[in-house]
Length: 121
Image (cartoon, rainbow, N blue to C red):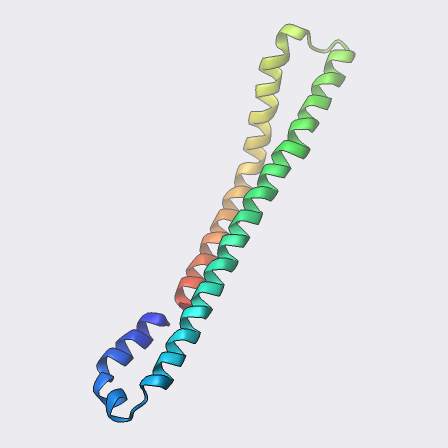
């Protein structure tokens, strides 16, 4: 949207000057710039919140769940202490495999949303 306005104003610069609409044009440009900045701030905030939630998900949910699972396996003597690292990596990789599709779909949805935002600008 901004580039269309720029192209229009550049093409009609003489008309704007003849109509003495410079002040009005400045006001419109200021409002458009503020709107673009607001959208950029909202997008930055949204990306930051998404990253934080993703970090919380891994650090406060999945990692403790893996640790509890390992503790249960150790307690029931299904695995030994020497196997902890291997079993831990196996569980993490299995969870990654299960979550890969949902993460990929989420990233595609985020990409589609970004394309829609860029189209609006």
